[in-house]
Length: 260
Image (cartoon, rainbow, N blue to C red):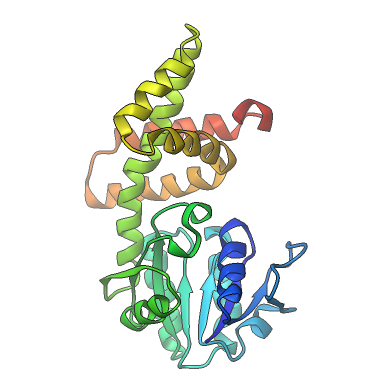
């Protein structure tokens, strides 16, 4: 299988490296990347990267996702699938799916359900879109667990955002607990209590929430603002999401030393 990876950030580099390690032909492009993973072919442009690819994985961040899609589509064949793994609103995913369909290119909206560095290719994915069923088959062949959750682009994104209400909200609550405990010198004790309630692996999960939220606060704030808008379209109340956004803004505005 020929695979193109667009974006070599944290997640993109892992997918490119691990897929190349399984023997797949992987081409990648990212103008901001220094070294690329071993076994991965660097492409000069997006069009070069996707030329002849059976599967295109877009991991460039929601802000660049539309631009990258527009650059990729003209160079893709009608048998290829463009899989958007970026965190974008359901309405955006539907619009991008329609844009791909107009060119005869398959499109799939893919929700990533855990931090990729933790499980790498074993990270569970949910998939929707006009080629969703075919994409699940391809991902399964590559050893990537994927579940079809709908036939329309945006279905997977919507479910992932509902999950974020809890996961990002829980991380904000961990931060609030830790900072409140700091005032009485009980941070370690308080986080031990939280970890115990989370069950097996709770201590590692708390640490990931603290470090991951600090590292990715800006991106997660933008994601939760999209979640807030989605909940408003449902007519659902969202005071916890509002508070999560407030926490993420606070964390993002700190210096790296303060937020680590």
